[in-house]
Amino acid sequence: MRSKILILIILVSCFFYACADKNKSFVEALESCDAAAIEKALKEGADPNMNIENITPLNAAIICKSEKVAEVLLKAGANPNEVDADGWGILSYAAGKKGNSGVVKQLLAAGANINPPKGCIALMSAIVGDVEIETLQMLIKAGVDPNTACVGKSDRFPFLNLVIVNRGNDKEAVLLLLNAGADISVKDRKGRTALMLAEEKGYNEIAEIIKTFQKSAGKK
Image (cartoon, rainbow, N blue to C red; front, side, top):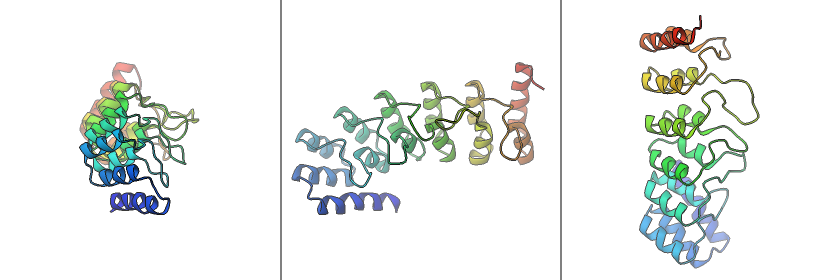
């Protein structure tokens, strides 16, 4: 429903703001998630960075869950570091939506900033969005900090707790963050470490994994 509403906003806004014909066909191609038609419209002069009501073509690529659409737009000059009015980057938006690991791949390849000037990093969106493990892997490989959630906040963030709360008994995600250097001593707002939370939830395998890391790190 949300995706249809976003596309509708683009179409209605294009009508009221009298978009050029080249952009009308572009919007129609975006609506249908037609990569070939999008590429054709771009070659005819459509703007890959057109912004109507804070919605851009890359937003459409995410709605379409289409790596090919993202690739076509980025090759035509779409900005992989665009941010919305609240400072959230397009990478964070894509990373938080299931089915968009391919779009995240294209954004990273195009130079998307893993540390946006404002807002929270894509890792936060990916964990909360309970997306595919491939997205988390790509973000970690790209160098995201598994201890810092939002720009301007120096406190270390309990990402491991966030994984347990949002992804349940996801041992692969916990291991991914631990191997990337996630701090196992950080506590959440209720004063719980990741180990305490895992034990509370009955995730015994995750608890054992964390204990193993504690021992190897010399922590008590």
